[in-house]
Length: 354
Image (tube, rainbow, N blue to C red; front, top):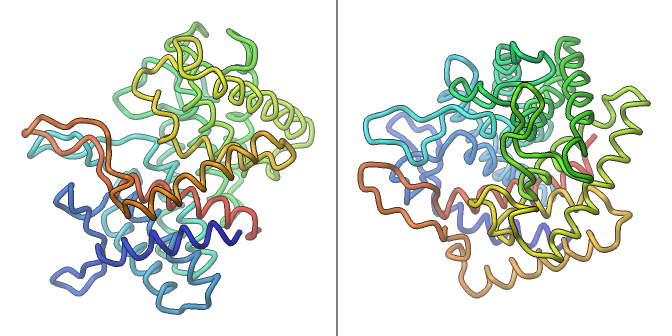
């Protein structure tokens, strides 16, 4: 775990420079390229990095920073329980709502609560989980709508983001409604594996079960990475079935990584920059018994460490061009750094915290 803590410490030095206090003295993170407070999701991810380092080093200051940043998340969480997504939004308009922001925040909220016992983290996570229960699909109660404006199809990685969030909330509350939905949703996603192409989930299906958008390494690894924490909550037959699916899905991804991006293994064109898909590293870290997967994880972490040593935080500078002055950036350096921080925290804390 030492390389992870070393990378995390380097990231923290960058994030330290973005900490600010508002007129009321409340701590927050400035996303300088966004020109505003960091999103709730990236703030939670940053908080988790501080919680991880605080726990590893015994630093009360880092633990206090984590708790204070989660207070900021709760203050800005939408009344519905969702999180606003401020990227590529027209000036003057509110941010969009998307299940990815919720799913990517859940592990951080859970671990910050475990580390700090800050009730803001628990409250925010429960509010997110309760919101997701309002988004159960009318067409199939095993699925969860990706966002309120994308109800025309089933986004399978979004289903697992939802189940992951419900799982982390269940661990803190024991709410049986969460557990029932988790098991329905995981069984549903298991049923969809390999239906159209051996070893694959499609990115999206239409409600009649046909493919909406095809295979995607980037979204397949999201399913693997975020479903893994649910294994202890599944009944044994489903748990054993999911372990077999997880292994097959990982071997499919490893073959795709050898082949390189093409129309068969990465239908969404915007996901073909695989070195900048941190979920690949997280997913492959979930299968420690597969040597090739662990070699990829170790190699990728070394590459990132070398890149950060050469370039600092600029290593995470987005490659996506932003040329619409009427919209906020598509993404930012800080957002990508915070996503990587969440990856490090998940690898470290999911393996050390029950």
